[in-house]
Length: 502
Image (cartoon, rainbow, N blue to C red; front, side):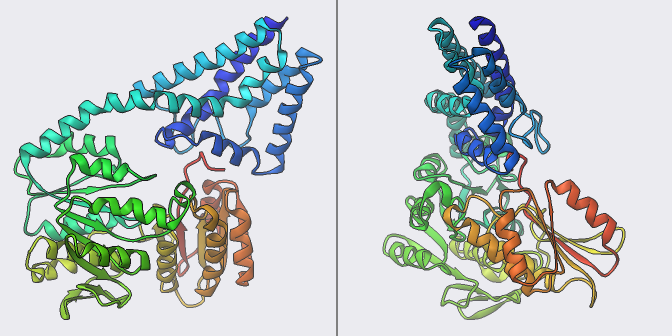
């Protein structure tokens, strides 16, 4: 009987692993699957009850082994809402994923076999519930091997950079990296041959792939966006993508949950400066102002500001650009955040280019997809697509944009799942976003997903928004929008969490 129980437990564990392996892939194989499991199992009463039933099955299996079968069933059907197949992305069976899946499977089977041999039914039936823990354990085991596997692509990319010899502009920041990169590429495109890393390919393997596939002979400037989830990552990138100009766009609580403190985030971002002869630093955050002051004795520093701080480049909220006291021109503020433009102009100064050469190109900045992109529906209402933004400063800017759209008396609607990875600041940041929505005249506040639901609803109701609606999915919210909005209304889609968030 114990071996039948073992076979069923293994089958249930393999099915449960499909959903959690997908979470690992969406999180870039960095671990933390157990953290997501905790979020999902505690997000509502249904999942808490299911988890309790699964744990009860493990305990009762000590006395009646067959009762432990219900734990396997719980592991397959729960947590409710996190499907075996993805809504926003499916599990992709790359070579890396196959290696991870094999190790997870072997570990799960080994535990079950040990339990069967020793006739510990409790150990046998528990495996489907602890798959997230086994995945995180397996990720830590295979990490050194996977890094060695990637070395050849990194070495190939480093050789390509050496061969082509472009000037390297490296960009990091808590937010604004992609938008700043695109603004720099646009402005420099008028005077240099430019290649920018695509989309958000901002980690080790993403940048290696970008260089290997797209860096062409004759490229004069390579713009590399660099992200980080922890100390040392940017320093590692800069060892083989050595910046000639290093840019820090902003500092905020993004990834605070992983890093712990804003000071650690600042330290991790400042790694980009260590080997760069010239730095461009947005000094509106006090910690970045300190970094700029400290670094000025080590390298040339171009300071930029969007908050009227004394700096080499300043940009006003109305889009006026000033370089060392001289008016350079202006840009449409619905196309780019002021600090991103300030950083881009700062790069011109860092490269010793005449900043007046960007004046004509400021007026036709390209729209950055899904970042405060304004459009109009077939039914005539205005739409702001800010679904790729997930930070408090960007969210506040999107609300200001919403305030100026639509007709007098028209509805103003926000659809959002809120912001994540803000650590201890997350609940307050989402509550404040709800309050701010009321301050700009939002009439309907629609919360999707469950991760930040309580904080968002509390904030919206504090602000006196009369229509606060909750949906489990964005698709339900979109249907509501189609059924209710008309010409003269305006809507902001703020952030869009992937479906491995509850």
